Every structure is written in structure tokens, then in C-alpha cells.
Length: 312
Image (cartoon, rainbow, N blue to C red; front, side, top):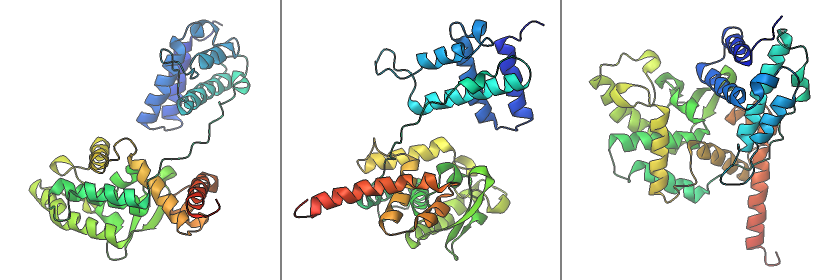
């Protein structure tokens, strides 16, 4: 029997991921891009089924080298690429497309433990003020942006979680938001008074006007954050809102939507919150993920000690 071509094997694997694993279109596109790049590499089509050499050679060529002309992949991207290839090889062996379990010979690159970028409490305050455009600003976009950023910081939400909220997910009276996180896991997160006030101004003002103007028949109260024509705010629009606020606060190169989530966790721990509580609020499946923030606060503690102690 003639060996299956690499391109055909990749298509079979993508079909398996779509039909049997039910992966989302965006995830499938990422797998296709990773595996297409592997297939296009020199020697891959010829050698892919013979042993691990083709994959090892490819990953070595994609390793970051620190040269501007040939930078390679960042560690996170390299690990994802390696995981895509190893998953493909597991499928190929299990489906009888190759005679050797090549995946067993492929190790994922070790991830460096990177501390997330966070803001100080004063920097967060500047950012939120900039998002609102000013204390008396009633501009619809400013009210929406302020409400969005206040919620990201108050509840530590991922941007996808915030944009997926419907009006019924937020209780202004009970001061909590119902969030569907990764793995469709639900959690209830408290929301502070300052964020609730900003959300109330947005909901009762421009949001209500937009829903009425565009004759939107809201399901579950309609999207909490609206963009054009009463539709759910797009991820690109949310990113633009954060970047505008960051530029206005003089923090342009340091802020993404996730920065507010990192700052939320760090400030809670610095304020004495229990690590398990922070884990629940963030929706982390494993506490080891949350423990990353204890290293960050440890650095902050040492900085404060060095600055404040007379004999430091």
C-alpha cells in the first residue's frame, strides 16, 4: 500500500478534529496554519512518515535565534506549533497512516515562566478615567468604554467573557455578574459599586437608546455591550477602546484587555485575598495557574521593602 501523502493526512486529521472532536472554526484554522507551515518546510513531505527527524528538524528551524533577519517563533508560538504536530502524529499512528509512533519521540518545548504585566492601582485609576473621557462626559462611546473597562477590572474578566455577556447576566441590585468561562464553566463574580455605577449609566442611557433606535428584539436582554446598529460589540472594537484609554493615560505600550485581569488578581492578593478565592473569581481550573500571581506580588513586596526599610 502506498503511503498516505502528508497533505492528505493533514486533511484527514482536520476532518477528525472538526467532526469527532467538535473544535471551533478558529481553532481549526490555527491547526491548519501550523500544519500547513510544517508541510511546506523542506523535506517534510518526503520524510514525515519515516521517523521524528522531519518534525525535529522543522521545530529546530522555527526556534527563536535572536537575530533580526531570522527571529524564529516566540516560545509560546513554538510550543503551540509543536503541540499541533504531535497531535497530528498521534492521530496518524492511531489511524494506521504511519507504522511508527513518532509522537512519542516529540517533546514539547519547555515554557518560560513569564510574569504578566500589571498596573499599579494609580495607573488603573488613570486608565479608567481616560476611558470615560472626563467626569462629566456623557458621550455614548465614552460611557460604554468606561463601563467595559470598569467591569474588566472589577470582575477580572477575560475580554471574550465580557463581550459574551447579555443583560440578564448582570444583576445591578445583587451586584454580581454571571460569567461563562473556558470549558463552558459558569461562575458568579461580585462587582463593586464604582463599576456598577458606570454600568448603570451605560445601560440606562446610550444602550437603551441604541436598542430602541435600531429596533433590536433583545434575547436575554440583548448584549450587554453594543457596537454598531445595536449589535454585540466586536472584539476589535473592544481592543480599540482599551488602546484609546491607554494612550490617554500615557500607558500606550503596556496595556491590553488582559492587563486589567492581571491587575485585578494582583491587587486582590496584595490586599490579603485568599489564593483559592482568587482562583474561583478568575475561573482557573488549576490553582497552579493562579499561583503565578503570588510570584508577582512577591516581587512587589521586595520592591516596597527595598524602598521603605531604613536598612534595606
